[in-house]
Image 1 (cartoon, rainbow, N blue to C red):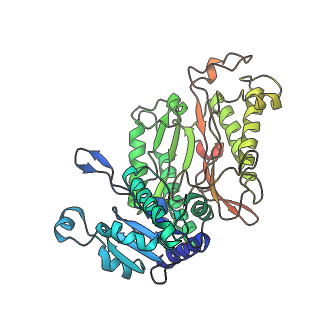
Image 2: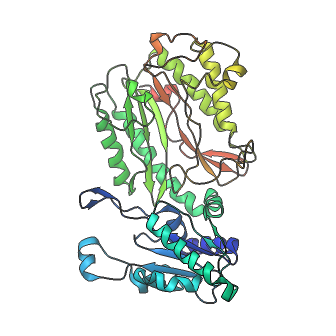
Image 3: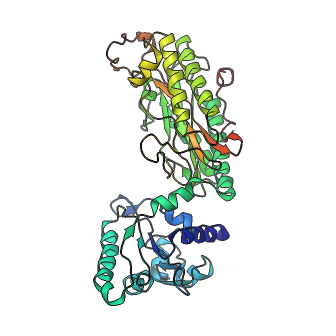
Amino acid sequence: MQAEYRQRREQLMAKIGNGTAIFRSAPMAVMHNDVEYVYRQESDFFYLTGFNEPQTVAVLAPHHPEHRFVLFVQPKDREKEVWSGYRCGVDAAKEIYGADAAYPIAELDEKLPQYLEKCDRIYYHLGRDRPFNDNILGHYQGLLRTYPKRGTGPIAIEDTGPILHSMRLIKSQAELDLMRQAVAIATEAHNHALKITAPGRYEYEIQAEIEHIFRLRGGMGPAYPSIVAAGANACVLHYIENNCQMQDQDLLLIDAGCAYGYYNSDITRTFPVNGKFTPEQKILYEIVLEAQEKAIAQVQPGNPFTAPHDTAVRVLTEGLVEIGILKGEIDKLIEEEKYKPFYMHRTSHWLGLDVHDVGLYQHGEDKPQLLQSGQVLTIEPGLYIVPDTKPAEDQPEIDPRWVGIGIRIEDDVLVTPDGNEVLTAGVPKAVNEVER
C-alpha cells in the first residue's frame, strides 16, 4: 500500500502547486476516567500516509528542494511503549512510511517554518482541534508580519477539503478491494442473522452474533453502532439500544456494516422475525423494495446524484397513495413533501473511509454532483409509520393496521463505466428469499 499512499500524495501536491499542506492526526478519545477508546486515525491523514498513531503531523511541501513529505511523530520511548504499545519512531517514519524527513513531534514549532516561508499559501482544515488550529494560525500570522522583508511566504489559508475530498470520492482499485472485503464480511453476518432470528430472542443477541463475525473474519469491528431494531423500534432511525425481546409478528430491521482496513460497508435489511410477513408488512415492504430497485437503476455515470432519491420518493409516494396513507396528485404531494412524515431521510450518501464519506453532493444551487465511475454510494429508501405520527395537513388519519411498521433496505452500489454494481447483492432482499 505504500506505493498507493505515495501516489495520492503526489497527486495532491500536483494540485496545490507552491502551497504547503498540513495534516494533524486524530486525538485519543476518552471512554471513561483514564481509559481510552481504541484509536482510529483521522481519515484524511490515513488516506495520505497509512500512519496509524496519534500525536503526529504530516507536511506536504512540493516546493521544498529536498523534503516534500515530512512527518512529525512520537519518538521511541521504551517505558511508554511497555504501557501503551509500540511506536514507529523517527527513523522508521522514513524507512517504512517514505517520509523525506522525520522529526520528533516536540520539534514541530521549530521546524515547521522552513516548510512555510517559501510557500504561497497554507492548505489546512480548521477542524475541532482548537489548540492546533491556533498553532497554525500563529505560524501564519507570524509569517505575514515578516512578509514585507522577504517578499515570500503564505498570504492565505485554504481548506484542504475541496481538493483532497474530490480525490477520495473516486475509489482506486486498492480501495475497492478493501471495500469488497468489508462487504463480504458484513454479507456473511447479515445472512447468519437472517437464519438465527426467532421470536423470543433479544435484539442484542443478534447484534452479538453479527459483530462476532465482523471480528472473527478480520474486520476492525462495526463500521458504526449496529442497529438491531424489532417492531416499532425500527421507526427510530438511529436506534442503538438493542435491548428488546423480539415478538412473534415483529419485523426486524438490521442496519450493520463492517470496517475492514479502515474502509466500510453499510447494509440494511428488514425481515419478519417469525419467517412470514403479515399482509400489511408485505405491502409496505414491496413498496420499499420497488423504490430501492428503481433507485439503483438510476445509478449510472452522468446521472445527477439526486436521481436515485427523486426516483425513490416518487415510488414511495405512489405506493402510499395506492394504500390510502396519502391522498392527492402525486407531483403535488412530492412538491409539498407530504411523504416526509413516513420517509424523512435522504436515499444515498457516499461510502468509503468514512461511512458518510466526504465529497460534494452539490455544486451550488440546482447543480447536483454527477455520478462518475469509481464512486460508491448507498441506496437506502424506507418507510416508517411511527406510532405517534401526525399526518400532514389535508391528509387522512392513519389506519391503525399500518402503525408501528418500520422498513429500510440498503445496498452499497459502485458506479461503473457503463452502469453500476451492487456490491452487497449477496444479502437477500426479495420477499421469497427473506421469508422462511
